Image (cartoon, rainbow, N blue to C red):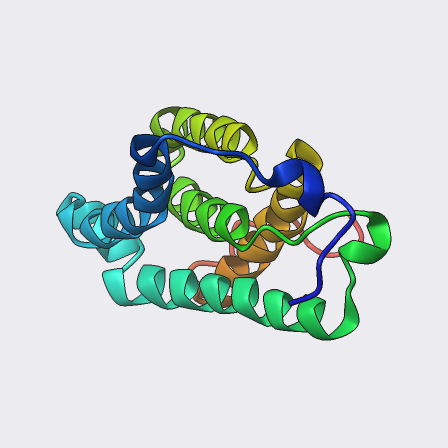
Length: 168
């Protein structure tokens, strides 16, 4: 793996509990998203079926790993003095996916992201800049993935009947 100039300041001795906590965040976020897909009210599941939500989530996570692969080959982040944070990117894509489906979940998950970011910085896994850049790339990418999976609007039978004539 390519090492960045920031690696030297990232190496710290850390308590095992904090390491285990950091390691548990992304699996717990993924489990939360999986439960979220199926545990919503029926009306919400009809508007956004679990299969569509989970497809968008899977594609967003695929973008995380495609970017990781591109970065390992092209050193995109290290050219900026950064290190691609796969863990941050994964967390942001899951939280963004859930928040796009149900905005009020953002209020519960945003603090999780903030604490996770603090924890990764405290443990020396990544700098704040590493995580912010990953979030700045993955949040919009996740939004685009989910946008592309939305069904096309269907025309209603009376569409256009109440519209004013063209040119007026």
